[in-house]
Image 1: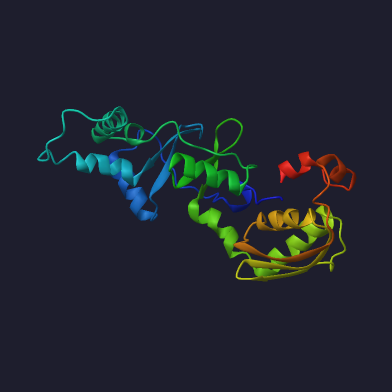
Image 2: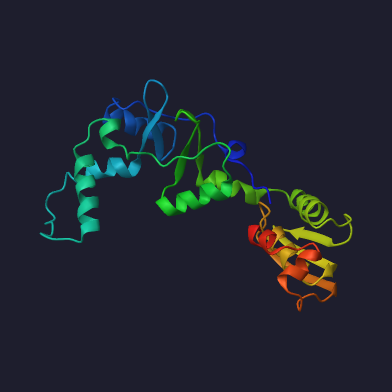
Length: 242
């Protein structure tokens, strides 16, 4: 299924800063625009890193030396501690920022963006062009916007993309109802092997919360080998792709 692309959900009006901007101005920018982080760019608008409230907090936390530090720690913690101490002494956006920035391209999907955010534990991704220049920014809230799609739009996409274009069925062969993002599929497909395919494809449409399967079938082809199923229009390679 075709997921929404980043350039369809990203914010193009980006609050950004230069690496030489002082600490206090960075804090003021974040507060004024009610954001928790922003890209740091050079004079050519190429992304150098991201500075966040967390980065600023390292400086604040370092002001209290009353808490004794352990003389040893796991390597991972020692590494993060060294990074924190470096940022604690930072006076500009460039010395406070996390670099390199985790970024994404405008033609990647919201699914890819969600996976990237989860893997790197970040809340925002600068969107860059092929030369690394800033085009926009996408946040967790932007990605979740797909779940605000109207139920009717979700229903139309499932009918058109799943059943008509992919499974080559007439539009009204399967009854599709959507309520609060929950999809219910009712009716009969030609072959049993098509049922899980239809359910899986419907679940991958942007905005779908879950799929309730009330599908039946006219022909039980579960006993056929993959090569025989391919003769009926279902190939093992195609199944893996979905």
